[in-house]
Length: 444
Image (cartoon, rainbow, N blue to C red):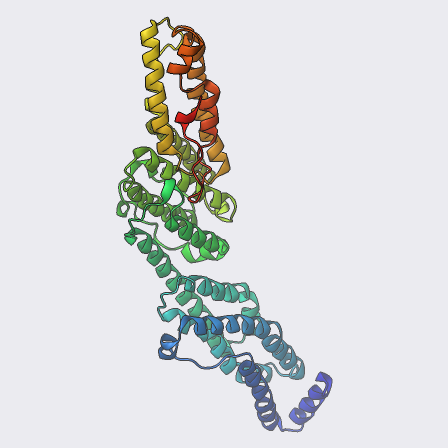
């Protein structure tokens, strides 16, 4: 039956004094259609106790069904019903309001109360926050349509339910963010990542944060009126001190930077498990570089200030410099401050001996280290090479003749400058299963 036919019948019945009967029949038929549509979309009354008993996989599927039902309901079911009701009862504002309210109230409230019920129940799955954000997004994105479709005062309960669900979702998201922060702080794993590589906690945390960044606009709404985090509750590690409050950041930026700060502080404590101080600095450099790489490749870069990112890029360089100092400082110290200054043969021989011992010792300590990021790896290699190879080249050129003829050079000089460069180029690229390559002591 066409809309115009329904309107003609309604106008005729109302005009003939059968308005009550018309409304009753219309409400009964249309309400059954709406309720059936809601049911077919998988929306049903569900209690908090039932949600609590559900396995996460089951609840996850129900949330997916709800998100799809939300799209269809707002795009066709309720929108179409409002258009139809407004057209059929265009001659009477009171009748079209009462009809639409009676027909859709129950189904709409049922649809919009599901997120509130889910948000009230605590589930331990880390994926839960993303489903909650997805439901919040669905309501938020459709809010203008919700206000328009359910604009009648007699159906304000639907708008109220949608707002209540958003409020409850906001509260749960905030609690889950606090749980995530607490999870990082309470991580007690003492596992040492071989070679100073990327810690599993860093990977997990950045996966979590980059996924959160997809909901940047929604998180901004949720966090906007949340009190700023207390700096005093963080470990006192000045190296990772937060950006100055001279230029207050947006609440979302404060929250994200705080979570990263908590992660970095935890990594700092884990770095202390390394016996080699140099590797502990490399571990921190690798992990901070990984954090920054994930930031640059995700929406996180738009949620954090350029100042914050720049300061932490500088910190990576400082950590890398500290690694170089502790790992290769003794090798440099084995060479004279002025590598071209005149020397007696015995002194030159002793310098070559000390250099060979310290270089081989440093090499074997550092050969198992890894630097996954190619830019950081090249940066460290170039820096070490520039400092070490250049000084040793000058020393070698100035004093190889001091120790005697070619035979004497072979006896006392274990490494030529090009050998040192070759061995340095072999650093930071080995995997845990690699065979290990040749020893520096085998150099001719």
